[in-house]
Image (tube, rainbow, N blue to C red):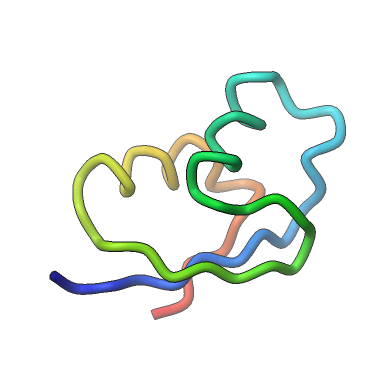
Length: 58
């Protein structure tokens, strides 16, 4: 499958618990960390939930 890169650009401090858990599920635990994940609808939904904290690098 296709892969996409996601970078955490904003801090998780002050974010609700469900958004923190979503970042953890994506593998983003530190600021400016980049991960490569498979591009599927469930990952797209997680990205949509925390879109204000992350950047998608194509």
